[in-house]
Image 1 (tube, rainbow, N blue to C red):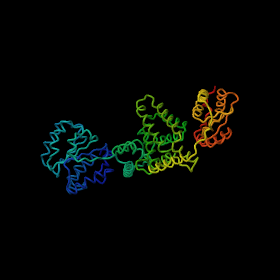
Image 2: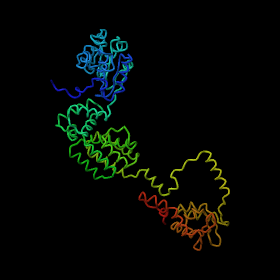
Image 3: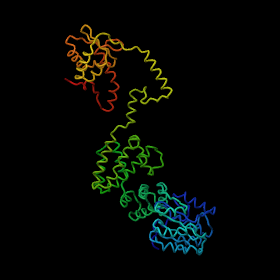
Length: 533
């Protein structure tokens, strides 16, 4: 007897054996139990997930000698004929090669005849979206009002190509991709039944390459068995399927997050020297970075299907940065996909991309900055609670009352001609625009050769900063003469001195200096902005 591939040998022969499509099989079994069998069904979903298999199982259950039954017996003549593909009452047609109106006309002529053995005539049309527009139109009337002994089952991977008039006449069942844990369990079970020694990580590589399709997974397993004698290791699977060592992918992610640019470039060089596909490496890197973001969101998430040893490494990597930082790096990766796909120098593009990611990893996340700023003065929150509207009105009233009670600044009384004030301000504007703005509305009094200047405390401290004070004295000499003496008074009436003022200003910048230590910056004194004459 000729060899039977694993995908055919292990095709499910009962609804209980179907993997990962319980939402479909349970619905069909309940419909059979309650005699609510639809006359037309549309099975949609990706390839290799069980659409045609479930269609055959439904045909078995409907025509089983013990049925209609939720599970076919697989022992009666009818069940065996369906399994062997020789049943006269079950018609399987490939919509890709029999897509014309003539084939549909033949079906329309045959549906009027009763089944030869079973209860139902079952028409299974695979890849039904390939039928022509004329063929669909010819099928409409029969599909809407078929004889009671006819059941149509359509299977397709592209339901959007089917006319809405056909879809509306069918019960639609959506088949899903099979999850990685279920695929792993099924392959492990089949390997044990076939007495094949295969490592766990090798099975996981096959699962990853199958992308949710059980038929693809079994075909790959068949190929790997033929390539390597037992025990089958992960290296054998990577060699025949052209897969990357996932350890390299996680290693490059770790090097990026640790800002180890040298190691990043060494890994890229290793991949290139081994002749691996750079673009495929990029695709896998994007997929694993997505896993990293998902694990940062929730370490126990079910959205990541990876073996335990890879999950543990990614969970540790997720602790090296914040969620927003990882998401921004993920966006950088995704944005390079069109360019990497079309470039003739994929290695150079990948190197530039990884350099950018590594440099981006050096940026201190905003969450860390806020935490460090908060540690400078733990008693003061960085973000205050926004008061309610009533609280704002009350605070406004209190502020008005306090302003009215507050003593007004003491301004010296005496003559200071407007022309002289304008001349002084004009001279100051040439030497320092800052001083001109401060002195323009200041209280000035000139008496017995002494200029008394009355200012708010902050402006008094500012004007007596060393270089600004020198500019101010120089302008006063030019305007008022060499013998002019200057005194500064604050709003509270106290004379301020240069030394005390500078100490006060320095104290105000203490917090700023601490903040700049975080960023490696420096304090820029206001004197740097004074225009030197």
